Image 1 (cartoon, rainbow, N blue to C red):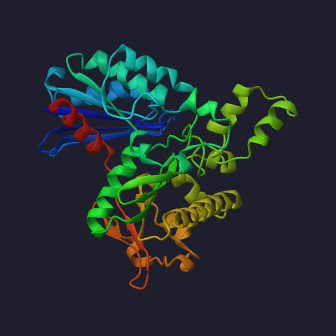
Image 2 (cartoon, rainbow, N blue to C red; image 1 turned 180 degrees about the vertical axis):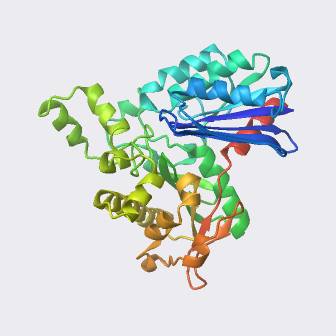
Length: 394
């Protein structure tokens, strides 16, 4: 069966058309920098490719562009949308309602909408992708795969907040964790590579960033919590911050709660520190001597190193750390910065290996490094396709 995977992120759309269970990719592509005048659009098949730079103001326009490329008379791969059996959607927040992959109906869409406040940069984009896909691919089954599912194995000591118990029991306020599809995929690839599944830290670095501590193949802790806004420094999100800052901004500086929310989610992180949200731009400016960009990169790496230390304690040891996602896979600079001065933990990076690019899992540690340092390209689209196929077959 042909399954179209739509991974609608906060500033990007990744997509693949796959034949399952053969795992054959018919086409793939990406639209990134959504909301900017310089959005990148790619579309690749075995025989053709499209690369364009044009303004993509929002996800609806981006998804319509994807559909047009799929149906293109010269380079397209389908003649009719009826050829697609199912559309698999990555949905970031499933709350306490969804811990498994589900068929989408009006009730599911309403639940996703109710969770907008918990994932304001993602769930609206996810739902937009669903709504547009329902219009364009009207004969296909629409399936939701939730980012929170992989983290449901966390023990209570990790997912429970130190707040009144009723907020958990009655209001479901707890750590949910995100990027679960990616953490699941790369951890399984790392375990297969290492032939050891005991103690791994996965580091997903993109516009959104998160880490997970994985023991015996199961998540025991993760940096994102009730929403995808906390933890590491991200493209536009502040990550961890003292909650008193929020009350100070409201009571002393005159911000409304909505304005504080906008600052912390859309104006902070690397954007707030440097004026740029894309790490490629920040690295380029740092090379030119931009002090704000240099400091922001150091702050980003510092917080990741601190979390490696915390998770090594939670795991009571460490076999490997795994870099993945756009920054984790492609930025040798950030990997080197993160792994510098980590010799106490037995982490030592090989600078020559670190420069090598590959689509396969690879080691970038020295021979003397006690802890393996891996780069594992994530494939959330495959993971989603596999879960969609399993649901439909079962």
